[in-house]
Length: 377
Image (cartoon, rainbow, N blue to C red; front, side, top):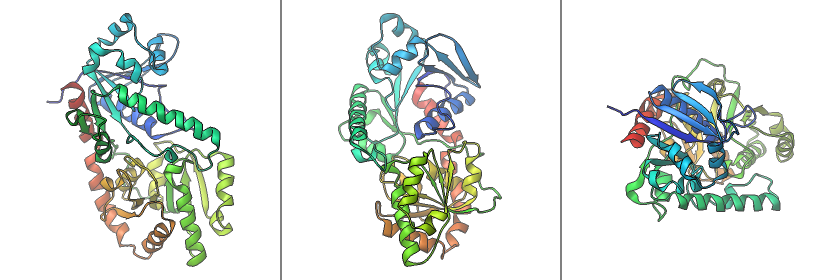
């Protein structure tokens, strides 16, 4: 029988995202808390507000805004009374080493702390920056990387939950003891992400940000190459928080015919995202770096083929039954794969069945009990 208990999860804010900003970590915090709550875990989300007011509640989830939450946000050391307040919890989860210094000071209860790692350590600096970085952004990202590395070291020795075998392998490189490492993937709600009877409006779908790691520039080069060499134009929908300046930059780097075939959909509410995926013939994940690849998983759950770069955790999700993997950072290889896909439609028929079947392994009904065992064993 899977144990149930009381879990504390400190985070910047809750709900963790807005309509303007829906990032991978925000989705992870949102779904982990809600799904564990549905499975009988009492989850307290601690946020950095100035009052002790309880201001939001869902099934099994309570949000507590307090000065203690502010200490976690500022990564400050706990005093005796604050440490005592944490004794009420059976487990504490640090997502992406959040509040590492704060938890490091809580040595008496460190055995009850688990951390969930969503990105492999020692990732290249280039994966932190936007497609048009300046010196100021590079400096900011250098500081962010140094902070990430420091927080990673501070929580060494705690139970470490890695979202992919790729991340676990990176953590084994002297950063964490083998016995402390568990691989528990990100979960997905397959009742929401499923095949739907939607009219195909887009040839290709990209889900991501204006960030070099996501590789949108590689996809745009591939589409420009196909247009100039083959004369083929594919309608590309782009989901993500792109500013007017970022859109203008994209329009400037592609030929007019490709520009006319671009559709910026903006940030899409998670409830609406399955329909958009189903409206697309293929989801493209051209990343230079990807520790897991949630959009790829969401796509195959919808029965939609995925074209992805062979990087990070993506090969753990994508194989020949559900998509195509290509050499990373190679626009010509990506262009060929796109061109071939639309002339070999059999893959779409295969993925319609194989994709949802594979995604079932990542359903929250499978993943939530794994997390419960890790927290409350």
